[in-house]
Length: 90
Image (cartoon, rainbow, N blue to C red; front, side, top):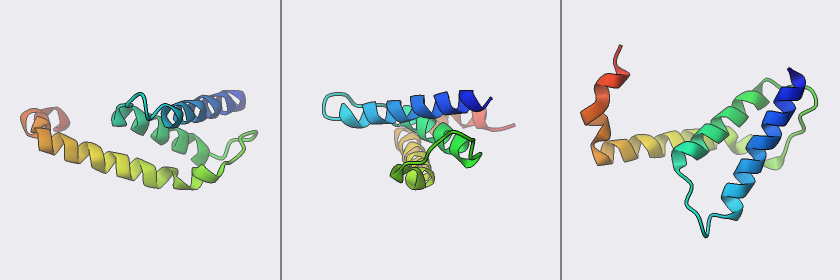
């Protein structure tokens, strides 16, 4: 399992680097970035052996919260949440 965590962290970090490096040419959907950052943060919170930390790791939780807020505001602005809110009920 530890090797899978190491590989997942490497892949998520690679994706974040790619998003950053290509931000001038390509706009990445914030929901995709939220998925990456959230999953990376979850894995790092387990403190798996063999996974080193970067300077950006301490900012992941704040990034998750900012991206969630962005998505909620976007959904409210577009009216999607009002029209589709029943999918969140249960």
